[in-house]
Image (cartoon, rainbow, N blue to C red; front, side, top):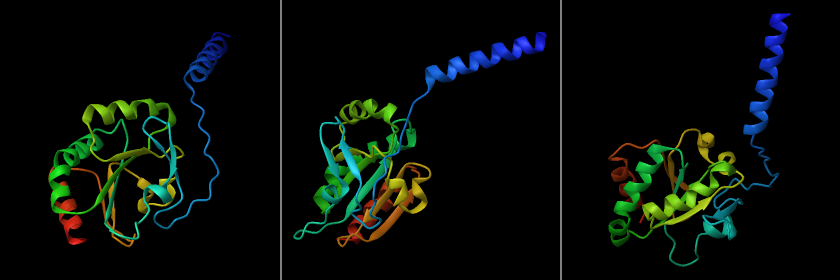
Length: 182
């Protein structure tokens, strides 16, 4: 009897805990194009404008240039270090090479409100978007397993570089590849 009572109390406590902390997340069905510039909805950091990766990542007819995409999470400290390093070097890099840099957060919806404050506080000088539906996982090599990850697409939209994780000095390799693709 005592064991049944304890089991019932535990079950009710667990049910109460899970019902209070549950986050409902529904993946939207979407026809995703697996070729750059893909076909993935993106939101700006204030959620005021929805764009599509076809528009955001489009290769211009004139002035083609490599595109760097850095995937990150608000809870990922290596991601913060990586983006801080890119921020510190961005102006100098732009003087030496013609390229685009875009950071895309793959945070779950309950973390979306943290993106804009981080971007503003750290003063990221490049475009930042949110992959609301987390669809980039379905088109990027390795399914973005482990962040940060950075990819460079060449002037024609072909994948030219991929790097997972971040350690000081990785930015030197990244910029060398950007220069090589000029």
